Length: 606
Image (tube, rainbow, N blue to C red; front, side, top):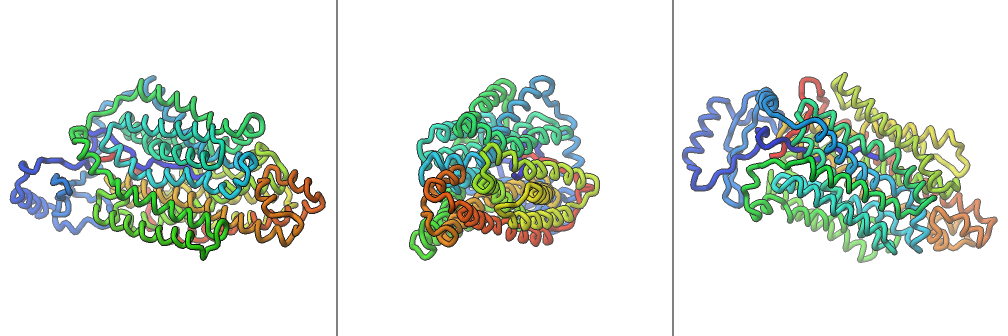
């Protein structure tokens, strides 16, 4: 699993040197403003000296592009400060510390752990869920996609909400959404309820991903902030190892519903810590009216994005499985996706830097190709994480707990490789070679996983997972480093948000595509290898009770059914090979820069 990084960390309002200076319209003299701009331009040289890449300029400059008038008439002046001035301001700030900071960090870590577990704990429980909810195998893709859908689409919007609304209240609202979604999942009586609960929980997770980093940005000095960010991020690494195993244990020994009930105590700890130990800072945005705050949030863009992704996922989920690709429902969804995403793109260009995904930043070369790299690597990663348990439970006949144990080589090496490669980049500087080599190693490992068979020995499925995990871990965090290197401090949070959005989108799409390929494979191969076994029986049985279902019809057909089932899984693993190859290609187009000589930090949010 990928290790999420905060999309929108903030720094104290009195620290941030990139905030826009809000002035009333009657206080701004256009003539004076123009003269001021001309004066500054003459002193600093041509304004065109600032490259599109967003790299920090050595001398602060203001040009006519820096003076902007919003839709509500507010005039803003954006001015960059150099790194030395930022460090001087940083040194003058007195931050809280001691036991209160430790308890606050612990509370944030528990919330992050709950969110991270929700990403990985379900993988080993899904086969059991498909046996509890009849004919639910076709919905497996939505168990993961619905969560990733709302997390993906709402994450950029929550970044802007944190900017203009009370940080503590926004975080608590996101935590409430996450817990309500968990309760809906834990009490679900059918697939539809479970999918709805996952969507609600994903909406809350979108606020919690970046919220914890934003709170740390308000309470921890920049010099020690990386340590606290590492503590928060490590929860995702821990969950990637513990999640599948814990999901298997709870599913086999208690109930799969406890995969969701377990989130409640974590949330309770976080609520107490946030209320007791975090005092939200006073910011000038607090003086804006509710209407002005809402206007700064791209609600229409978020709506278009959610609708477009829903149409895309429905088309991928239905096409060739529930309905033929030529069916009007499938084509209607694809057409809807095309139209709505066009509206979304138009909305982004119209709002410019106030958009959910500002075009100026997205079209920067490294940001663009790092995002594509992150998207496709995430696709392959999620295919393996969601469908390797099917291999172990259906083909190898293990329990959910057993399949969780057998996937530890994969998820553990992802975490370990990410740490080692991060240290390597810190020591050496260049990140592009690690990006290319990591994706290439992952692709080779994905090709070997594709070769797994019914009778593959342990040394094969362990070794293949180790290789894929090393490759994925080597590349998974690099996009977030790359965008920080090529963007100035003001644009770093937005660049990270774009990379995280791409990562989440890749996971959501891959699960739907994988489920489609897997279902089609079953309907194609079961009649060929076991013609006397109804395909619907195999689908309804799920991975956990596949052997029991076949034993009740024709025990002699089990070997052939397993061969057909294995072929369907193999065809699903082809996706990982394809996207891994594309990720390797995209890595080659990233700018070959180095982290040496540039301070890697989480910039404040204006």
